[in-house]
Length: 213
Image (cartoon, rainbow, N blue to C red; front, side):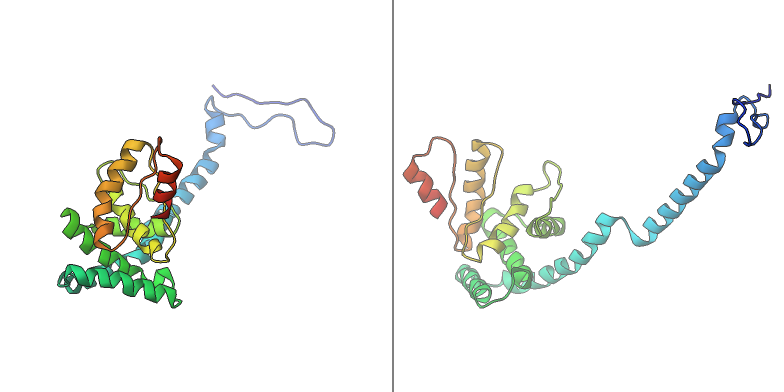
């Protein structure tokens, strides 16, 4: 049944009554707006299909660096353990000489990957290399349980430790701190670096030693 919507009369204003509307008049009145929103969403979906999401656009350039790291794997896998240690010193020297950490990232990540293979029998997957780059950039890398977050952290930790300054990895409890320090410490040892563990109950001397390692 048609409805007529009226308002109190105002001098000089248009007629107080709107044209008759159906009982669904409110919905019908908003149809142009709904169509506009739908058109915008369709265009947005089309743009996303061609250009990718903002996250995909940020990740895409990093894949080229992953390819560069992978290209080094064959060469580095032929090195002896002593030569792996030498790579750390060479990378430190490059950073000390003025090269940025970004400039040595591919060499550093490839070196960590080889050290992890030898120390743990674990090889960083490509997506883990991506995660390491994201962390190095100071961003958050969201990963599910079991996707190797602990191993991912070795990449930016090693890279940033090349400056000679300590790198801190914060965990949620003492158990994980001890576990990860011992577990991933085997990787860092292969690379000529030391690992400390700071938990509750340490004396002042023990805490200073852990920070100074």
